[in-house]
Length: 418
Image 1 (cartoon, rainbow, N blue to C red):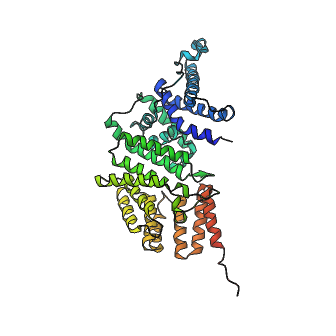
Image 2: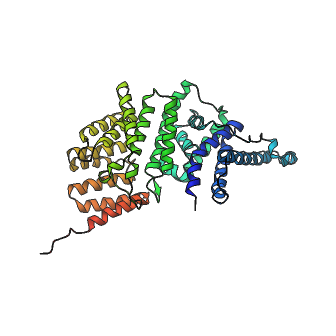
Image 3: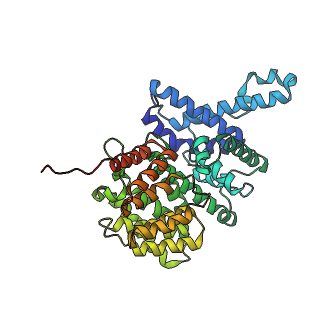
């Protein structure tokens, strides 16, 4: 069984180690493979031997040695007979790692490197999720709704493009930095989303991923404090993560927002998020992360679902829809309309989404429809939609919640004895 303490330590160290190895030796594609093997060695050995005094240095040393082996194998295939004798000493190919590696965190440099303009937006996001976010290829494939084998090829091609570009390992100049920023923010948003609502597995949340996304976003915000969308994203992540303590029950079961104990929400995150979005909104122009943060602030500041300013949330979602044709935004807009004016109005909007191929295989469409049908009094239709939603999600807590709704609707109302 994996050791949770070791996993929690390895998550933030992974991009730091990869960044340090790439900065010292180059070879981004092979360095990523070497870093993954070092992380695997740590996850296997540390629970038995104990965590070393300098875990980052240990990982860099092991990754550098493995990189030497990988480079040796690659060159041996090209000049097998002529180089056999020289491979007796791996340190002839790479300078040995320092005893105490520098304490600088190369994560931000790595983040921008993965979002190099030589890569397509999809490749930028996939590579950064793999190298910086630490997501598995299977998790990234689910986020893009493609087979795992397809995503493996995409990531391999992206690493090769980085290698071929000869990109120096340093922060890009301001002009290039602006070009890459959109992809960087999207990556951070996806990492957080996977941590806040995991697409698969036994747990609803992966707190280490959400925390890492917030940490990285803070770094970008410190670098670009005047960028409205960077500030908006940081506010959005804080305001959303503030609800995390109340999202699950004692057994890890999902608790919807309407039933959450809002006293358990993180008041410090709410105060910080509200302050950030209140500061940036008047400056303009307003982007989609700022609008989402404003919506999150309205939720977090409301004492209950019933007292939430739903008309204002509807208006903000309509502004979001003007910025991008996003089916999830449209789905959330339908929920807000239903809460503001009644379930039938929301169901009318959802019917338009049922023909949108981008969302027809997403469990959220059917879960929302089921909830609104239940509010409208259609228990049979609600049960069918809850079952459809449960069949589409790969998250076990989501499945248990949805099947629980089905079971509740299947139970006839209790009658009093005469």
